[in-house]
Length: 105
Image 1 (cartoon, one colour):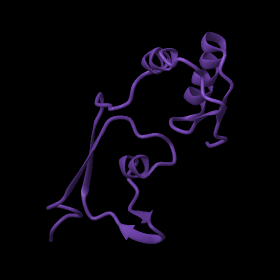
Image 2: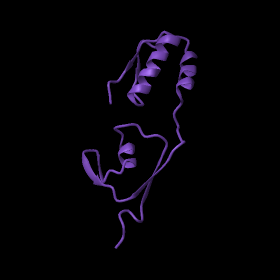
Image 3: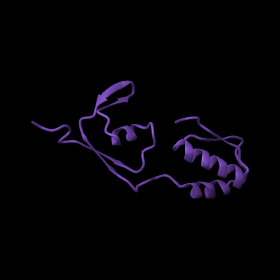
Image 4: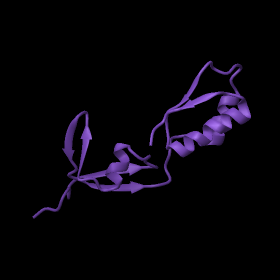
C-alpha cells in the first residue's frame, strides 16, 4: 500500500500567516478549499523557514519615507494583525501618515 502522497511533495518556503492556504497546509490539513472546491491533500507537505520575499518593517518605512508626498490614503492589507498594527503605528509616528489596517484575524 502506498502512503498518502508518497509521490508528491508541496514545499512551502517562508512564513505562512494565519488563515492562509499555506498555513493550513503546514498545519496538516487533510483537505483545503480552493476556488470553492474542497481538495484532498494527497502530498507530503514540508516547510523551509527563513525564506521571505517581503520587506521587513524598517525596509518598508525606509521606502515610504522616500516618497515626495504621502498618498491620500494608505491601506495595510498583508501580514498578521499584530504586525500590521505595529506598522500602522510606526507609519503614524515616524511619517505622520494615517494608514488603515484591515480588521482580520
